[in-house]
Image (cartoon, rainbow, N blue to C red; front, side, top):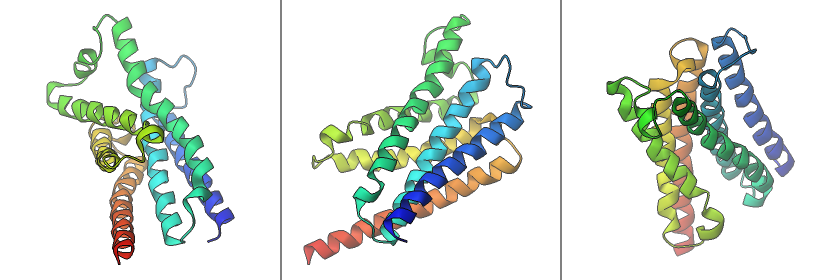
Length: 209
C-alpha cells in the first residue's frame, strides 16, 4: 500500500466507523431527532470518540505493516485527534452540565449518582481514562521527554478501560448488531496493541545492534 492509498484507507475507516456509530445511535432513538435531550445526545459523542480512536490504532498498524513514514498520516491524525478531543470533552461535560441543571449537584458526584451503585466502578474508570487522554494531549510539548512513554502506555491502557466502560454502560451496546461490532473493535484493538508493541520492540533491538 503506497502513501496515498494509506491516507485514503485511514480517512475512510474513520468515516465508516463514525457512520456506524450514528446509525446505531439513530436506530436506538427511533430516528426521532427533533427535540432530543442532552441525555440522548451525549452517548453518541462517546461512541464517536472511541470509534475514531480505534481507527487510529488500525491506521497505525497499517502504516507499520506497509512501512510508511509517520509523516504520511500526520495530517489525518492531527485533524481526527481534534475531533476526538472535542468528543471526549463533550461526552461527560454535557452529561455533568445537564445533571447540574436538573438539580443533581456538581460533577463528578452527579455522574456517579447517575448510575446504580454497582455500576459506579465503570464511571470511575472512565474518569481515570478521561484524565489520561487529556494528559496525552500534552504530547506536542512533552513528547520528546524520556518519561513520556509512560503516558503513552497509560493512554493505551485507558482505551481498554473505556471499552469496558462502554460495554457496561453504553445504551447503544446492550444488544443488537452494534454490540457485535463493538466486540470486534475490542478484539482488534488488542491485536493492534500487540502488533504495535511488537514492532516497537523489534525496532529497539535493531537500534541496539
